[in-house]
Length: 80
Image 1: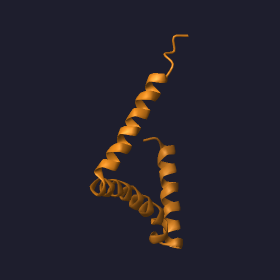
Image 2: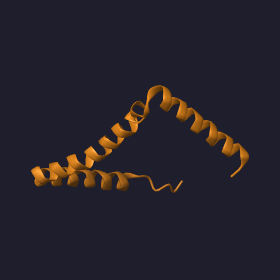
Image 3: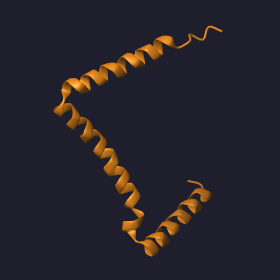
Image 4: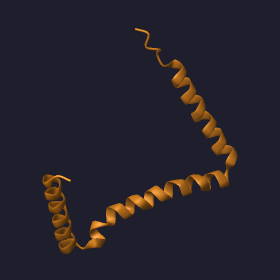
């Protein structure tokens, strides 16, 4: 590790420590907790939708697959 990298890491840690002292860890960690909650919510919602109505989800998935295949098929070959 270069000295400049160590200096940058030290500055970041001091800034993080001061922010934690002034605002508290709960305020600083609010955004990562919210992001994690959203990331874990999405798969749970998808699984719930599949369990509730598998035929509807299957129909939507088939439509998405057909759209992707059509997009790949229509792509120019780049033959110049």
